[in-house]
Length: 332
Image (cartoon, rainbow, N blue to C red; front, side, top):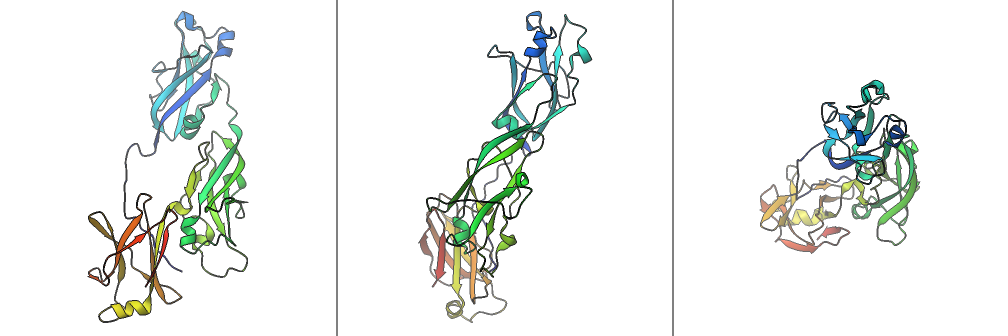
């Protein structure tokens, strides 16, 4: 079965593309204090040198708000991956190793790590980036059920990703309360230097011989695993679907000259005072025509009609109630 999807409300906010905001860098300076190499009481400061400040020492100074020798700085906005080093600046101790700069290679941490669960780094020591966390994956399959790609009684949905070597069989998810939302908590080894990625995949029952898009894999880009992943995802990022299935014999009667090879039929739908046209309806193997559109969550009633060749409305505008699960509309 072929289908096409379009959103009829498009809202794009272009602000800081490729950048993240609001994250923290922390460093434990207690070892440097114990070794006599860091003495704030004498005016010593610790700062962060990075691509953000052109690697200038002393510009981004860290503070110790808790008095526990863990110094930190909040940054408003940086690139997806922050490359940086710490440095001690002292007007008293002029014999600091490497002129106060860390001797280790530049640090590289994804902004996602610093934003969600900033680690406490140790001055001049490499940070062990590996950390096992229980990540809860959640995905709604209601959209795929409306499209008839997913049968909750016989099919499965799995989560897989780089943490599983992209195993096509993945880890099976459960829908314990029958609301079409599948969940699974999985221990994932998070690496600060290399994000983990994941996707959801449908696995059809063994007797299935029909068509499923992309072999069951999501068509979206890979998703990044983070500690904030306990959120609801939608398979293929399609939140709510209105699927129109039109009987070709009925449509042939509505058309003044019958269906001709050059004719194009679309769904016109209304949002307030505005109207939009769907992609063209496509013929299916069952002799029907169909198309699917994405429905914003705030819309609960859809007003629509069928349009021939982008002009003639074949039926009067009709209102359909759309539940939070989506809607399959069979015409007539």
